[in-house]
Image (cartoon, rainbow, N blue to C red):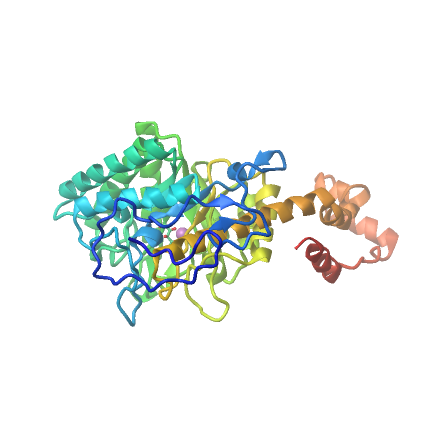
Length: 462
Ligand code: XUL
Ligand code: CO
C-alpha cells in the first residue's frame, strides 16, 4: 500500500503520503514500484538507472562484479527517522512496529522485495537488526534462528547474497562501557557469545565476510580508563574470533571498520592507520582487512581517498561503507553518496588496488528524516548506485587515458636510476650520500607538482 508517487515516466506528481496508522494488508510491500532498470543517461524516470548498467563491461569486468552493491538492513529496514529532538517519521506499511519474531520475519520479505527490485546483489546486517532480543541469551538466539530461516529462504528465492554480517555490541545498555573493552568481564563474555552466534549465522547464510566495528570500544574519559588493559582485551577478543572462525570452517573475510568517535569520545579503531598499527602490534594483520566508510574518514579529519590509500598500500583494502557526511555538520550523518568527485576518487583507489575481492560497495546510509515515504528508499539507492557507476566509468577512463599515472611515474623518475635507485636498493648509507652530494654541490632542480593541471585533467573526465 505504498504510494510510490512517481510514475514510470516521472511525470506523475507525488501523491499524498499514507497515514502512519494505515495497516499493511497487501502482499507486496512496494506494489507501485517496478523492477528498476537501466534506461541510460537521457532517461528522466526517477525509478530508472541512468548509469548503472549491471552487465556493462568496464576494464574487463561487469559493473555488477566491480561494484558488488549491498543494502544495509539497519538503516533501510530498521531506521525510524527519530533523532534526539523528535520521534520517528518513517512510513513502513509492512512493519507493525512490534518487537515480535513474526514482524521480523515479515520484514525480511519486504526487505528482499526491495533489494530484488533494486537489483543489488548483496545485503548486510547486524544480528539485532534482523531479530529481536529476548529475555535471555538463549531466547535471543532462538529468535535469531527463526528469522535466519526466512533470510535463507529469501536468499535462495532471489539469489541475493550476504556481503557480511556483524554483531550489534553497542545498543543494549549492558554495553555502556564497551563490549570487548568493557571494565566488566561478564560483558566481554556476553559479547563473545553474541559474536560466536553472529559468526555462525553468517556462515550458515554463506556470508562472504564478517565485520567488527568498535561501537563503544573506546572511552569517554581517560580518568577512569586503563587504556593498556582495554586494548589488550580487544586484541584477545579478536584472536578468539579468529580461532573460532577456523573451528567452524568459516572462510569469509574479517574486516575492521575504522571510526574515530561517536558514540564514544575516542574509539580505538579511530582510522585506517590506527587499525593497521593495532592489528600489526597484536599479530592480527594476516586475518583482517579494512572496511573503509566515507563519513568515518571525514570524522577522523581525513578524506575517503586518504583512508583508501592507507589501507590499499598496506594490502588491507577490503570493502567500503559508502555514504557521505555534511561539510557543515560534525557528526555521522550517513547520507547517500551523490558526489561524482567522491565516487571517482574512491573508484580510482579501488581499481588501483585490484578491485574488490570479497568486499563491495555497501550503502551504510540513511534517507533523511523528512524523506519518509518508501519510494524515497529507492531514490536514495538508485542515486548512490548511479553515482558509483559514474565514478567507476570515469575512473576507468582516467586510467585508460594514462596521463595521470604517467605524471605520477614521471614525478618519481629520479628514483628509477642513479642515486635514487641505489637508495631504494639499500646500497648506500649516509657516508656515500654525503660523498655524492659533496661532489655534486647542489641537488638537481625541482619540478612543479602541477596540482592545478591535474585537477583540470580530472575535470576533463567528469
Ligand atoms: C556505525 C557504522 C556501523 C557499522 C557496522 O557508524 O558504520 O553501522 O558499519 O556495525
Ligand atoms: Co559502517
